[in-house]
Length: 377
Ligand code: SF4
Image 1 (cartoon, helix red, strand yellow):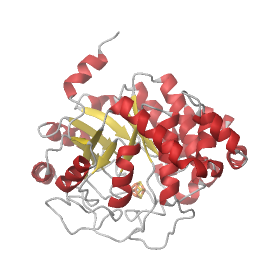
Image 2: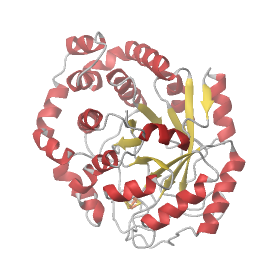
Image 3: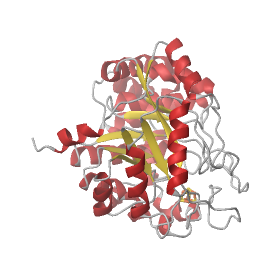
């Protein structure tokens, strides 16, 4: 399990090493076809800032070689905002006195239909807070059963589950799971996640292992940019990715670097700000480090940065997202988990991608492929 691997890594040493990287280290990394985590550290270091253009060219090349000129589009649907956790940066935390919603199955189906009216989406991400008593595995299984009628590729972003529970959901059509670690800084993790199951660092950091054991087709990882030094956090993420790829080699991986934005609870301000140039640097570095990983940008990002980065390394984007439960049809005015920056419609996003010379892909997976994927080689 990765909780054992992480014990071999020192946050302080990694931080020191990143900030000690030189331009020679950066040039060495740029000349390699296959980069190590140490090379990745050079590429995200301040020493790489003068090499952004060179990195962009490489990142574009690797992306086109592996993915063509395409952009996979997906849409999130928040099923609940009921949560037993108290992440200090999130508007859905348990102490926030706000109306809580758990969509009924009828409401869910109305949302699915409303989404299909927005665009030909086939990739959907079902999102919940952590309330296993009221929105646990049976609820998710039914949500997937209903979603199957409308969408080809079903992902969830919910509380970490047991291996057997992931396995059970794959039998209901689940193809992918997203679970961000938020931060890999184990000592400071509980400052941000003081109670509930999310306060258990090891339980969360081992969730991708359990997904791998359950043969989930796609695993999504990420850190929340704004908590700790982002360079160190994404280096831990790179170690985690490599570890998982070695162990669960049949699985597909995606990464995301959500930058923190204001939440309804007001108080929490990011400790660290990542500017657009740094986000671009990280995106290029990740692509140079891993030619195959899906790099995803959400509507937290502005149209400006999404459009600029679309041809240069990003391979998946959400579009027309509502971040409140039932936001497409049932409760269009409810409280959002976070504010979106790109408010364009899905069709507008798709049109813009075409203008940029990219082909929007609404469907990049079909559940019938799972039968092939599960067939022993
Ligand atoms: S980030 Fe997720 S787990 Fe944390 S309070 Fe918000 S909804 Fe709950």
